[in-house]
Image (cartoon, rainbow, N blue to C red; front, side):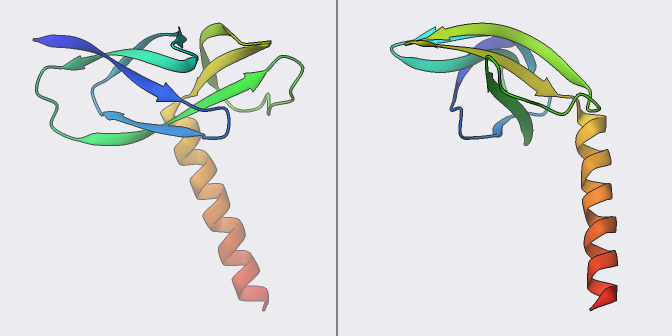
Length: 108
């Protein structure tokens, strides 16, 4: 069985812990907060960090990374666009960061 849960987002945060089997359905506002709603197992086995981007209209973002658009949210006087960074992209970025860090450490 599955259920739907909501998870609070913040424009200053880049991730949220969700059950690893979660399927993000939508984003919206409720009580002056931004949330995503996800379909999750009734009894999740483990959680993982999912990278969620909350971008204001006109803000720049890296077009070389694969994102999945979730929704556009109207919040107070602002408009935000909610994206999930796809898992393969996160792994690729971590590997690049580790390679860069290792290279920097070796040069010292």
